[in-house]
Amino acid sequence: MSKAIIIDAHHHLWDLSVRAQPFLDSHPALAPLRRTFAVTDLAPLAAEAGVTATVAVQTVADEAETQELLTLAAARSPVAAVVGWTDLTAPDVADALGMLRNGHGGEHLAGIRHPLLTEPDPGWLGGTDVRRGLMALGEAGLTFDLVLPPSMLSAAVAAAAEAPGLIFVLDHLGNVEVAPTPDELWAAAFSAFARLPNTVCKLSGILSEATDQDVSTLRPYFDLALDCFGPDRLMFGSDWPVSTLGASYGEVVGAALALTSELTTPERDAILAGTARRVYRIAGAGPAEA
Image (cartoon, rainbow, N blue to C red):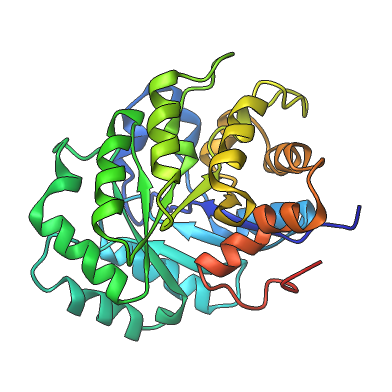
């Protein structure tokens, strides 16, 4: 098997001396993450694992963070694309998107994400103002990342169905809890989401739960995702540094390689790089085909 081209389609960066990360205080288990994680920390890990480009994803509802990530992307760091944040409920959301795209590094803005895991309004996705903002995203040629609890997957299905011109990217397989047998309610909503042609899924979040590269516990989830989305709508993401709570960066990449090892070369290449390159419009991350 030839050496795979790998794009990490999902990781985070934060500097606690610049900006607080409130989610880090939400659970004692997150205590090891209460420090700065910079691109200079990530770069050698990515290079050692064979990752040629990355996608930095927002963590706070603050446009200043998005602008900082775009500056990193413009500085020829491993970051090749950014999924940022702007207020999708704002009446001038189209203007806000335009300002981000026209600013420094704006050409690297690939999408927007709203932190639904901490959103106090359980009906946020169904709001009229939110749907208007999602339409503006689609018109701008950007994507919308979904980070949500499994209970909100049905709302995501409805939102994606109403905005067929916008690509919806499901982070971490919908934050499913890994168990010996996948939860039936999650699997049904996950499959319904996948049936919409404007949806994509990230093989991320669960990869750090593999033990010593034994991916057998993850196999039912990967097989379902592959069956539902196919390799051209499935992409690898590390979820670094959150993933360091369970595994090293290299181990997470190793889990993705192990899960995809029995696929054909085109299928493996799509999941490891091709889907991310197409969806997030990443150039210069290696050839389109191995």
